[in-house]
Image 1 (tube, rainbow, N blue to C red):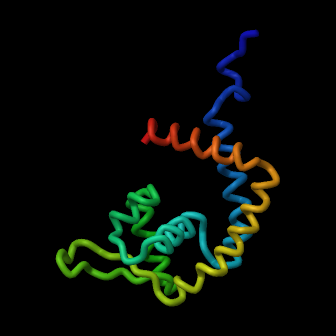
Image 2 (spheres, rainbow, N blue to C red; image 1 turned 30 degrees about the vertical axis):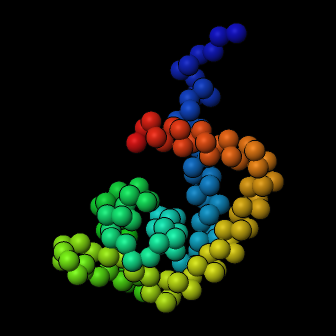
Length: 144
């Protein structure tokens, strides 16, 4: 059986677009409770893993565009979630440090994330989940 590669239903990029929007919408409901956008949440997760890192290191961890990251970090400072501190060794380098408020938000965010993970477990088995992670990482490594 031959398929028409031009059909929308055969386009991998469209599937990614649809699922990305669906996942972001699902997270939005949980993130509204903690007053974060999805990109802010991604940055916070990276900082909860490793605090007091440079803006460049945060960019490498999150792959958020540098221009967007700068604006987003300013908004996060305004919300008192982080502080931006000049490096002792090089004043051009800014370090991103969580505030007490940013640290406390981790507990609430973790509860929301656990709810979403439970929903995902009803959709994908552990094996399917691991396979999906593997395939997505494979695509990412070839594209980025």
